[in-house]
Every structure is written in C-alpha cells, then in structure tokens.
Image (cartoon, rainbow, N blue to C red):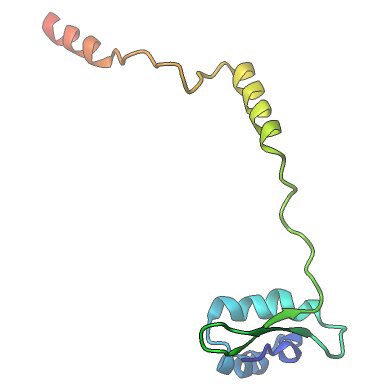
Length: 121
C-alpha cells in the first residue's frame, strides 16, 4: 500500500474518492486529507523514506520501515517529572483544605435524622 500524498494535496471530492479506493479506513482518510496532505503542499516529491532493516527471523521475509520525510510539530505539552507533580498536588490539597487520601470521612448523618423525625410524628 502506498501513501497517496500527491492526491491528498488537493482536498477535492474526486481526489478523496480515488484515495478511498486504497485507504478504506475513514479515520486514516480524514487524517491524510486534514493534516498530512497540507503539510506536503509545497513539496514536489519524495514524501517517504524507506529504511531496510533486514529479514524477519521466522520466515526470512524482507522488512523495512516506511516513514514520512517531514516530521510534524509536537502537539503534546512537555511532561513534568513525577517529583514536581507530587509536590504540586500536595500544595493544592493543603491550600484548598481537602481531605487527604489517608483520612477517613465522617459517617453520614442523614439516616439518623430521618429516623428521628419519623419517630416524633
């Protein structure tokens, strides 16, 4: 299966139908036309890089890695180390007055109040 990036550059109905013949997954088709196609709009060719990794051990089939040439920009925020997260959580819990995970909650008093009001009537 090849990646039809030249067709994905033009977001037209006919281009979508032609690519849909090969790429039958709707999510992959949407991603191809929404994000990957516009990213390669100015590139005249050479969209993929093939890296041969050798043969598979079980059946000696040739294996390779197929990757897109241009990398996408990072969309995930940088992750904080675990120690900083824990310290930050402790600060917010202490300042808001929430109960910690180790403290027990007081028992519910609703049933006792309801029973005492029924006995009075």
